[in-house]
Length: 80
Image 1 (cartoon, rainbow, N blue to C red):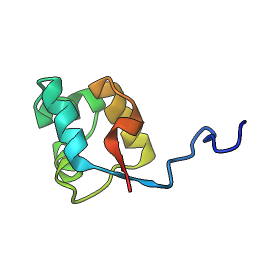
Image 2 (image 1 turned 90 degrees about the vertical axis):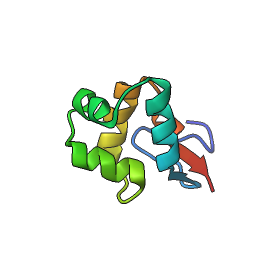
Image 3 (image 1 turned 180 degrees about the vertical axis):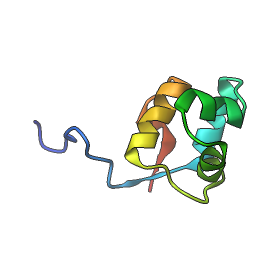
Image 4 (image 1 turned 60 degrees about the vertical axis):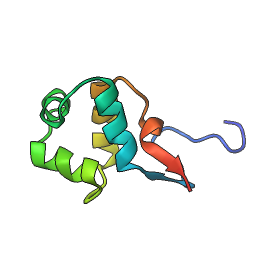
């Protein structure tokens, strides 16, 4: 592994989850909140909490959301 590369399972340390990006990605796919929750196999209330910023999805759920929205996990983050 080259210096500065992230190993499997490591997260970006200078980035934070951005609920607005989650919403934008959902809207681009023309999906409802309930639709994403159904595809990702999560509770509607959990998805609502993630998109409103009340909670941050765990790495497991970030992966499920990325698959549901056909994007990369990194697309949910903003550099801080």
